[in-house]
Image (cartoon, rainbow, N blue to C red; front, side, top):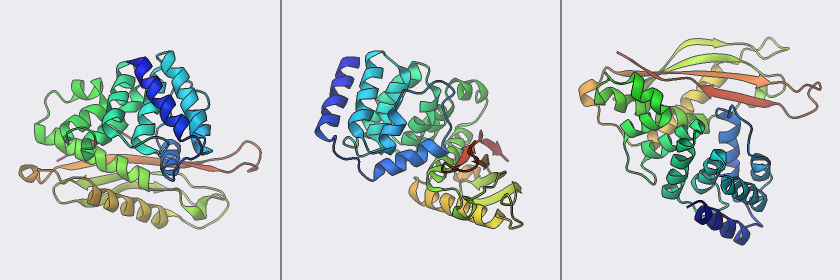
Length: 274
């Protein structure tokens, strides 16, 4: 199985080594604003994709697959899921994400969960989406939850992950940055969005608050995600709400802003609020 996957990637990359489609930009947005792996990264993959060098990315992934590296399976799935380096194949991406998870690479969970939430390459299923997002932790903590609650969580988490891909750091804050946190309350049955516990600082070095600019952008991202995701069948549990915390901040360079600054946005664990 490993050799077949490796050969498939190699041939695809060699045939398309001269180009990386615009979707590579989508991939990098996901990497920059998503949760960073807690372990050492597969060398060179992120940089190669950022540079549009599909062959270099494929070579690094293939070398990792030969070692049965779990992160290599994750990146292989990401390529079939989100980039133009190879033909889009969400079903194959899901298999690769599952292999990464089986080998202990938990960061593949949200990507597999989003495929279940959207019904891309796998049957659409918000309960399975929730379980993929959280793995064994979900199975342990949700033993007493109703199917409607699990589906509501999976729907809310799908929306949050989609919104995370759509939001970007406020351009006006790129010079000095902002930081803060927001709890986003989503009612799955109605699509109503509310913000709670909004704590957003002002742009460093100025007196201009950025609260509305950033919250408006998050709300717009949620609206777009709600329009994209399949509607859940939760009429019997219309009062359920899903609470997902967002945290964000600006990374400063160590050499007085001589390199581009990078915004970071992360999601916390969702929970049901009755």
